[in-house]
Picture 1 (cartoon, rainbow, N blue to C red):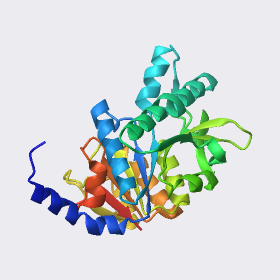
Picture 2: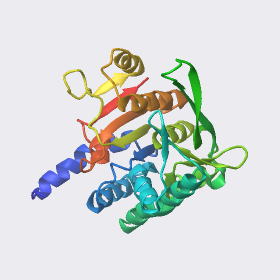
Picture 3: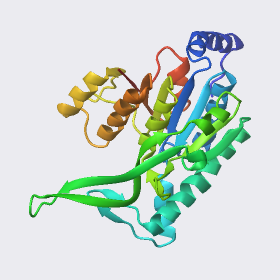
Picture 4: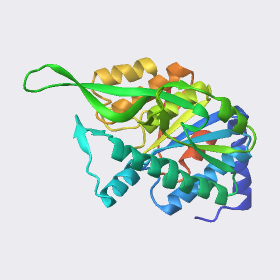
Length: 295
């Protein structure tokens, strides 16, 4: 790090004040992706930033993914996944590993880093306290041979249906930082794996969060000439999906943003989680970073 004079340090802190006031006592949900986690150094920096938010009277809630870590463990155990229309089918053997990795190793690693940085993190999944109830996801594909639409069963995969805030309300505002693994329970008690972005959107909506930050491995939404779009309304975002500017893997991300806004979140930001201090840049500086999507 370059040496900054004490005066510059003080000026930087002073400039952060109006931003800190804007988020005072507000809840911010941060979705931390499997890819954004990167190496240990990045993870430790992220943990420090989360503790700093809590110290400035912001209520951070972390939701994490773990796709790469799940893939590694399945490979190690020799469990071969089937795919349909590019989506992993989660069978009984796979969901066991998914739960082990998400609610176990990944969750507790993040909790450990936050606690090491001086926070008090509590690792939970959507199963705890009946926090998130989900229904089984069904997807349809057009069979190329017959052109008939077929339903595909993705196994133990769910879409959030209902969020119960009883447990989170016991933690938020009491210096405790919830770290949530995106697992939920179906109405008949099955464990379901929920897409982490969608899970974060549902939780942020239920909490009426001021911001949902989606930390990804891209800088944000780009226009046709690959320049970052700083902010978009839902209407603009829908237009850009329709005309193909937003394409590929960015479509489900932006659709999650729209879903979260419909659930009651004030603003959703897609940012590059591999950038150092991305969360602080977004919340505490004038320029921000990434793409803000609002109503």
